[in-house]
Amino acid sequence: MNLNTRTNTSAIALVIIFGTVFLASVIAALFYFPAERFLFKPDAVTEEILASDLSERMPDLVAGWIIDGNLQLPDGSSNYLSALNRGELAGIIEQLLPADWTAIQSAVIARQVQEYLLGKTDSLNVTLDLTDVRTRLTGDSLATVAERIVGSSNACSALDLANLALTVAGSSTAAIPLCQPPDTFRPLVVRSVENELLQLGAQLPASLPFQVGPSAAISPGVLVVRVMVRLLPWTPWLAVGSALLILLVMGGSMRKGFLAIGLPLSPAGIIAAGIGFVLAAVRESTLAPWLDSIFSRQLPNGLATILTPALVNVFSRFCLSVVAWGCAAVLLGAALVIVSRLLKR
Image 1 (cartoon, rainbow, N blue to C red):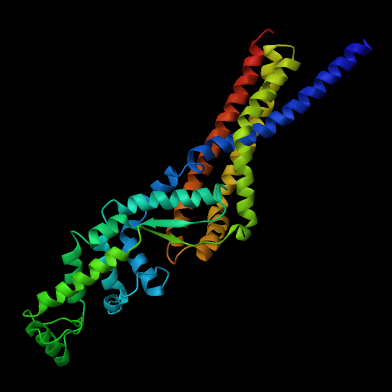
Image 2: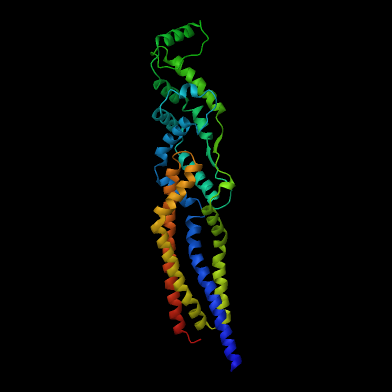
């Protein structure tokens, strides 16, 4: 009798231990599946960025980076760009950006930011591909851009007109002034700007990397995210393993096994759904400022205002998915308990 009592006590203790492990691993697994869908892959972030007004804002952002010096152009290009204001420069940049350029770059940026947050790289390096921009600058858009630059310039002074006349006559080898001339001299000035644009295009790099903080600058919050990323994929297997151990301890009894699994499964779902609801409620007051603090220090001006809302929206979808998975776990746990009552063994 004492032996049976000790055996039953040991079995109950094992069930409690495995049940506790099962409860904790299920809670984590209920976060893993939504995270795999929304956080561990860049597609969801890319969709949010494309749904934003990035396409409309990108020319103005790039113009601001040029004016602020964040985007360094080849030497000599400022001779004719310095006369342009931000709006005029943004209009020229819009002419150079291919229709799908923003979509491609947003996908690249989303992947680079995600790789940094998930620990696949120790530095946040955002790289913009300028190959298509360079091709358009030296090809189809060359004449249009040159015309816009000349059209945005100040009217030619008397001295400028005199120099243009001497150049046309072949009496001067001085540089053609950048100004808006009468129609007689306009082709000459436009052709001069085209030559400078061709030189700029030849010097323009194929890609533009933005240098971001080194690994020493990684915040504690990012480190926590990276630890979770490494641990979460193992939690579904841990949940399955602990469930099998519970069935084993129960001697293969489906009735007792379903009951022992269903009882912690429903609370795990309630806890996960509750956490997901709380995270969704505080995302604007907690997550958004945290992301802003990271991106504002490490990304060009204006880019954080696009990335932060996109990531917050993705996180909102992640939280709603956690709530849905939690509710499903509650129902499944209740179903297992009901089924255990119907089974004879």
